[in-house]
Image (cartoon, rainbow, N blue to C red):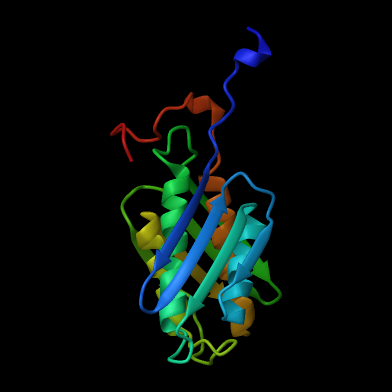
Length: 205
C-alpha cells in the first residue's frame, strides 16, 4: 500500500458558540492537542481550573466568555461548563475506536483526588469534593459542583470525582480538576485494537 493511500485521522476538534442574555461564549477544543490553552472568562479561578483541564488532559483549549459578572459568577460558571461539555461531545463524535473509560489519581501536596469517567452517552455526576465552605478566588464552593455537573451532563459522560483527603481547599479542588483531566485524556484516546468499532456491546454510544 502506498503511504499516500492511508487516510489521515479525522480531526477531533469542536467549536461551540453560545449567546444568551447572560453570557456570550466561544470554546474551541482539540482532543489531539499538546496542552496549549488560552482562557479568559473574567473569573480568574475558573480560568485556572480550565487551564488544568487542557494541560493535564493534553488538549488544546480556547475559551472566551463575557458574562453578567456584575450580578455574580453563577451564569458564567454554569454556561462555560455547558459549552465545554458540548464541545467534548462534538469532538468525540460517534466515539468509534475510543478507549471510552478512564480513571486517575492526582495528589497535590497534602490533598489526593480520584476521578473516573465513562463516555457512555448516559450523563451522571457523583461528586465529593470535601470543600470546607470558604470562597476560592471569589467563587463559592457550590459553584464547583455546579460547573462539574453542567459539564458532565452536556458532555453526556458519567463522572465520578472524589477528594479522598486534604486540608487546603485550593489544593483539593485543583487536584480534582487535574485528576478529571487525566481521566478524560485516557478515555478519549483512540485504541488501535478496536479497529474503529464503537466501544459498546450495543454498537452505539
